[in-house]
Image 1 (tube, helix red, strand yellow):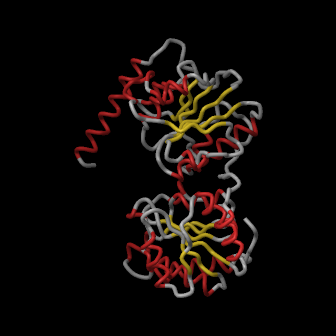
Image 2 (cartoon, one colour):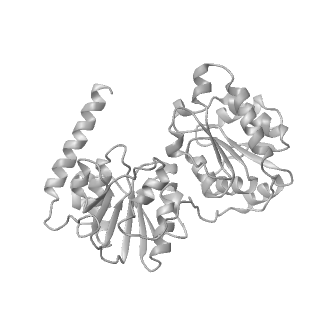
Length: 366
């Protein structure tokens, strides 16, 4: 770790210790196994600016609504990803969080508005791999009288009323994240990602209806982190495999990724460039096509959330933690092949062809 990263890490840990001292109140800590009050309002806090992280919070919504149908469940999210969870059927309210002036603590605009909601329980939906100081502080600030539940990590656990140890039997992110609700929910948890019914304009709906005249597949070669992206040449091999299976690949793309998508189309004659899409349109396209090939990135989680069979291609990322290995999805770790320096395109072609041939072509309205 570079020296400036170490310095930043120690600064955050020091901030957590300082905040836990300043925000300490007697009687806040709860013992594991202690009875908690039946909550009227529950707030889930996940404030990073990532589409996939927002979608990975949806199993908590399903679990809470199944166990406590009368409770209001709110979600505090980064303002830029509030659109991902907007109109989710199992969330009573999505609250975009304004992080500006956070240094004002309880007086910060984004904090004051949430404090007025008087939530009974606040769940800091961080993970156990790295202590999220900002998330823990915000969870404590917005719930001054609430029972704050979060992952047991030093030193942020001092800001929680009740800290939950990680499950020792799995590293899977969905299972671990739902485990945060164990002090509240005794029934079986819900582990599937979910998404709202997509809202489409007439122009896009007409385009999609026309495309559904033949079997389709979505290929999304983009991703937030370049070092974990599969090379475009391998995605072109994936597109050619889909053509061999009798499906037309539609190459989708996000902001700044159009040239990448065009390179895949050029290397796989017969594939087509998808139009620009918002998240509802991409969700509808994935669901209608019934097959998605993508990197480990936000669109992978979106595809899984809408129920489209998804082939996730992993490169130098923990597949056991971030993947979705249950049918109809398949996750493939290509790191050993990529590190060997040869055979990547052939392996991708083989995996995609096998996956596509194992699925019945589907053409259904969005």
